[in-house]
Length: 306
Image (cartoon, rainbow, N blue to C red; front, side, top):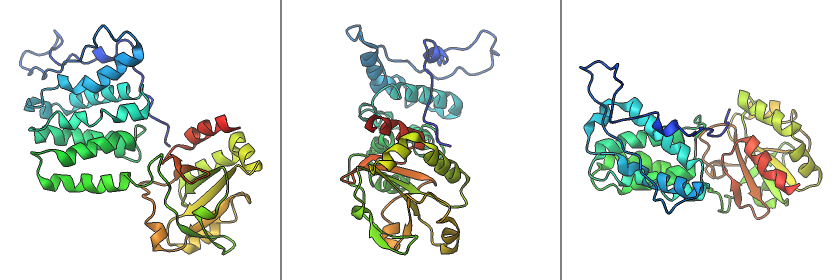
């Protein structure tokens, strides 16, 4: 279940790692951890929002990318990465996305460290099961990897592919139109739907989390209210080719939903679906408001429209 990236950053969380020192109880023969220095916000930045933004932007300046000892301490490096995410999560997504590429670009000339940090970025920002999944944070990182001057091209092939997929149907862009066939055998297109909002719901009948999400949607007073006022249309799309499985499911959903399957392979290529269920919220112009968002987040956003 996607629950959103809830990483608590209290007064002492950034002091949990003192990367340049060891406890007095450490064995003398243990090697010292490599040094990592947290940035210090200028005193002129008195507001918490400004200070957080500064720390997030300058965070990786405290890492010595040339120190290969980091590669032998992956758990420590990962904890430092997670603390950075905590800073990013305190900002609007657009502002955080302006600085995420720094984690890679500051390490130009040190491809081994860049690759390790790229692995962490993929795990937290790209993995469909990560609660911190965030394509807007990940896109600048992918671009920085592709632009890294000393990284071998073979390591850029996967980021190029991921970037191509991530740029599809981004928030603020027009959603790709596609043809679908409804349970009544009617051929329609996404652009045919006239509604203030379209909740595009990609599902699979055998998916346990799909059943949870469908139950949540039918039980949501917010979604039900907007649907009753004809302001919200739920378009449930089965993306696979097993029509027998789809036929068993199509009559087990609310009558007011449009339940459909892709009409052809062109439609199937219009959306990247790293995991199922996958939900998009579109506005009247079919511009993407939320992409691959938890149903709870979509419901919360729509509360302001009641």
